Length: 310
Image 1 (cartoon, rainbow, N blue to C red):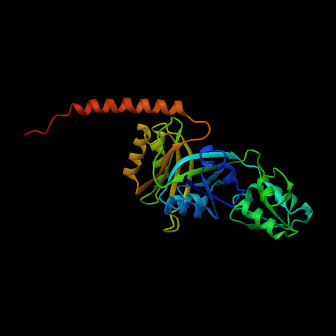
Image 2: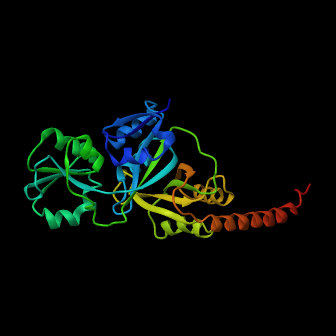
Image 3: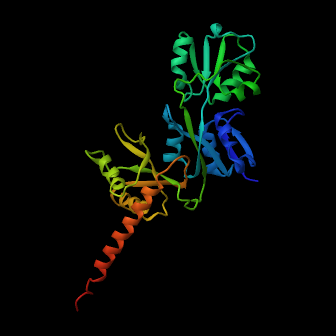
């Protein structure tokens, strides 16, 4: 049975997302304390797969996941999973909302309830935890009468807490994207795929990002995510993490990656995998057809080149 590491403890949104996948839910599930722990365990082979959050619709990319995949672990994304996020304020039984003086949760979750905290608990001290479930576990074990956690309703049940306020996120359309990662393997194309890469520049100069984006625009490839991250080498040195529609098996995608690899200092391939949600299959199909027609046209011209003179 496959072992799957995920951000624990029990009751996290990561576990909730993982359980929406029947094949993953049937595996040997291994809760780990932090996202780097999950990715490191996958990298070393302690677990077969890792399951981690990578992007939130309100707060954007999960930087610790992006940085670990870009700079530390050599892993490939196998699929993505998107779920709706519902955040709740949890506290020990008998504790009222007015008595909460400290709120604990994951650093990615706390900004998603910034408006609620400002309106209802303006003087509360904010503390970070490794996960929303870890925050709930701490509050459940310590039973501090003035401390609450932001987390899931499942975590409230697991750790003996009451839900003081439900659905407290500032934006109702709150979703988080998770990815399954493995040491090797690229899933075959499905026609509804996504490819993730990291682009490293030779040097920071005017138009360098535009030069990258033009490779995709010229081939009608839609980008679904773009983020810059410091390379950890010098102030002002950045790389770009990019999600694009399509699979490396698609000629038009392969052509864009080839062009980027030839012009940039490096391109790190993080995987081609089945995508969640709506997609632009028709646009990609037309782009692939145009690429094939152009390739045949160029091949016809090159076939007429005479051999070297003697």
